[in-house]
Amino acid sequence: MGQYHNLEAVADAVREAGGLKTFWMHEVRDAYGAERLGRQVRNNISDELDGLGMRHQPSRELPDSQNAMVRIYRAGSPAAKLIEAAQERNIGDDEDALLREAANANSEAAYVLGKIREALGD
Image 1: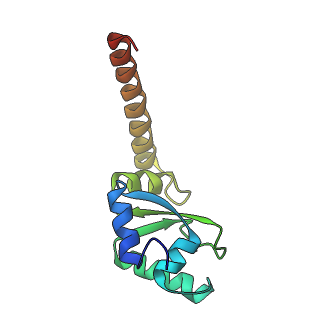
Image 2: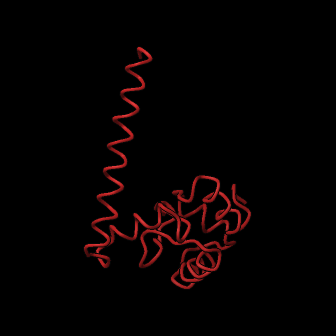
């Protein structure tokens, strides 16, 4: 058995990482308790993650390769709002505003951090 004993442990790791974490599909498969990543297993994993308040990318269908990576994030989290705003199906003024706000906040934070470093002589 891998690092995660079940999908609840995967969800806990996502929460501990601030609501967003990337996993290898073999880690998720092992946490689910399957040996292969067939279509039904991937659908069941997706459904169980959904029941735990988690979403994933790719969003349409989990990868069928154990060597693929999957991003799992907590539904409703700030990261989820950005991920979902940037998805193709969510194109509109509200989503654009959210993305601009996040980009500007990041730029402002970088500016402030630069000024702090400058003041500290770093």
